[in-house]
Each structure stands twice: as C-alpha cells, then as structure tokens.
Amino acid sequence: GAALSVIGQPRLPRALPGPFSAVGSRVVRLPGEEGARVRLFYPCDASSTHKDAPYMTDGRATSDGMAGLVGFRQLGLSFLLAHLAEAKSGCLEDAPVARETGALPLLVYSHGFGGNM
Image 1: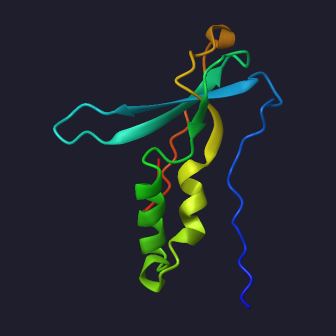
Image 2: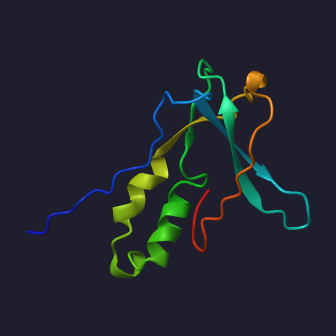
C-alpha cells in the first residue's frame, strides 16, 4: 500500500530568545477601493491571554486553493494540505503591542504568488 506523510505544520516557539518574548498577529485591510488584507506581526506581552492566531486566515478555503496551485486538487489529493486549515501560527491573535519596546524595525515580507495569510 501507499504510505502517506503528513507535512508538519509551522509553529513559533512560545518563548523567543532576545528582547521580545512573544509575537502578536493581527489581520487588517488596507484602505482603498480594493484594499488588500495584510497580516501584521509585532512584539507582544508573553503573558497575554489571547488565543493562538491561525496560520491561514480563511482556513480550508486557503488550503484548498494552495492544493490547486500545486496540482494536488486536480489529482484528488487536496487532503494532503487540509491539516494546514486548522494549524496555529504560534502567534497570539490580536494581542496588544508590547509597550516597553521603543522603536521597532520594519520588515516587509512578500510570500509571492499563491501564498496565504
């Protein structure tokens, strides 16, 4: 029989080394007629009681879309990426920004065509 391998889901460690102990995450829509959604990542308080942010904002719709981009859906193999629909990012959803951080660097990351939020 065929052996299936489940792709591991991404996760940040709960306690990060360095001056920032946790990462918050928030999805916002940019202003404009067709404003794009973007996910912001920022330092937050590790003691925050906010829930884990999802890896994919739209869950199964996004994982199915990714399966189509790599040809899995066409082969009836969308289930190979289905576990990502419920995956957690390791970030804290909508947690407040850590106040004692001072100035922060800005990182702009573009995942390229067919990515997710």
